[in-house]
Image (cartoon, rainbow, N blue to C red; front, top):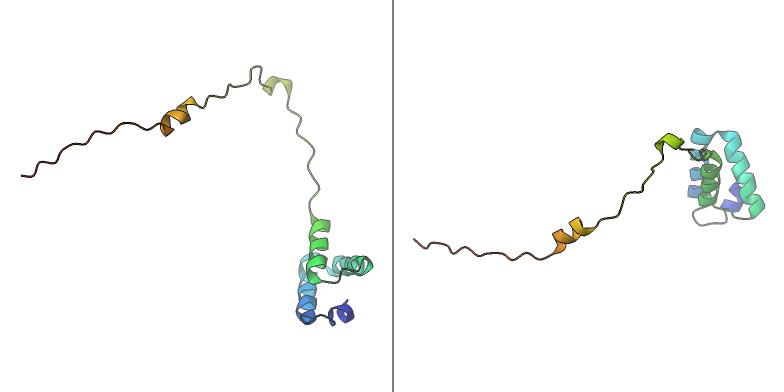
Length: 100
């Protein structure tokens, strides 16, 4: 990975970015991500970091099953009239100011 990154103008910086991931993910995970990046022929620190984040993402939780007792019997009706009333222009009264 280091040899391939050396061909880039910012290869040293990218290699340091990859090495900094060892503290977060461990040496084996970084090594595996580098191997995948080389296999995919996408040699960049951004790709390696992306592979590490995706591999470490927590698994999706199963869909919550709602008990029958908590399900709504009647769906609430949509009523936007209250909001529409706020949007209507209300006439204003101008109170004259007493000059004295």
